[in-house]
Amino acid sequence: MSLVLEIPGWKTLNLEHLVLDYNGTLAFGGSLKPEVPQLLERLSKIMTIHVLTADTFGSARAMLEGMGINFFILAGANASKQKAEYVESLGKDRCVCIGNGRNDRLMLKSAALGIAVVQEEGAAFEAIVSADVVTSSISTALELLLNPARLVATLRD
Image (spheres, rainbow, N blue to C red):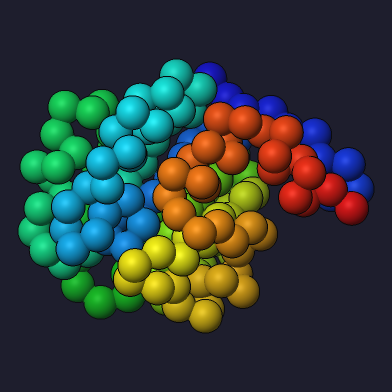
C-alpha cells in the first residue's frame, strides 16, 4: 500500500505511512474531531496510519479504539525527538506527517512530506516553518492525501 505522487520540479513521493499528532491535530480538547474517523478509514486503504501523542487529556486510546491505527504514547520529556525517531524507524522518505505543535517540528521537517494544521488550538511557529504545506484543518490535510492532484498543484515548481 502506498500513495505515489510525482511533483514536477520537486520530487516523487512514495508514501506508505501517515504519522499524526493527536491533540490539536486530530482532536480538540481531547475529543476526536467528528470528520476524522471516516477520512482515516479511507486513508487506511492506501497507507499505514500511526498516531503519536503525549495524550494530554488521557482520552486518545479510547477515542481511537477499534480503528486499526498504530498508537504510541510518548513518555517523559523530548516528545519532539521521540516523534522524529519514530518517523526515522519507519523510513522518513516513506512518511507523510501531520501536526500542529512545537513537538511536531522535527517529524514534519524529516518526513518526505510534512503538513502543519492551524485549527482551534493554533499551531507553533516552528511546526509551520518545518512543514511543506500548511492547511486550515485536519479534514483539509487528509483530503489532500485523498485528492493528490491538489498536493501537486500546491507543491509543483
